[in-house]
Image (cartoon, rainbow, N blue to C red; front, side):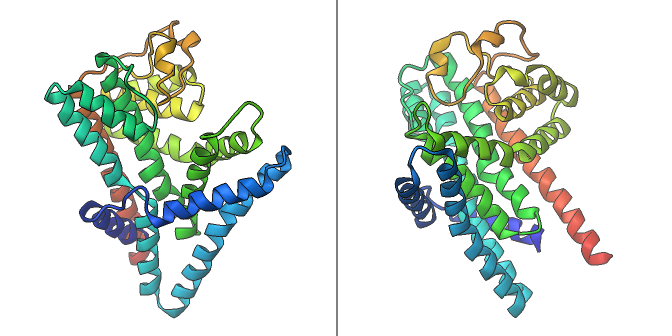
Length: 315
């Protein structure tokens, strides 16, 4: 059931992608805003309580409906799985921006590429130089596809099924929503960031191993081991260092503080000048390599899930 749920959700998303501002995401933002307004008293335990309240508000109903569907017939459970995955995953949303920016760069329309990147990242990119656009697009693509696809799949495969997928998606959204107004000493933003770091810990490392398996294994592991600490967020470091090694491209090596202000990723500039990972500087041709790495990784995950599914039914 797990494999067929994921496959059907991906197919539906391919032919009829969900818009990023759909009812599900608007509901999460509204609930997160209201709960923060009610619970934000400046105390850390209220931030914990607010985070748990939002997560429980979405996870428990999904889990209850899933159990009810299974009690009626497994087919209804399958339909519920597909619906929840369709709502939580956003592969086509990532692909839309990636393809549009790639075409703009190939046509020499760098200003259009900056505008699309600004819209995708939700922050100003007008100051990005031409050589930085490809760099930022590759990094943003890898981080986005982890959050929108691989992380959702990982938590869906766990015993709670669709509730696990919703748990991951809500946690990711809380980290985004509450950091939009994050200030120094903001308990809500810091707690949501900390929780999502640990929730994302295993999916990131599984994705990094997958990148190594479908790309240059030696360089991917070398980058992971020696350069993942250059990022302030270690999860992002593991993901991008391994992906860069797998593709033979140097990611995250910013030249100055101005690049950090783009808001796409946080790089430890002070450590970045000590040594350089193997690979070339990002060029337009590496956009296709990034797309190929993502698709091969997704195919690897689907093959593994298919084999486990067949082994389960044939045992």
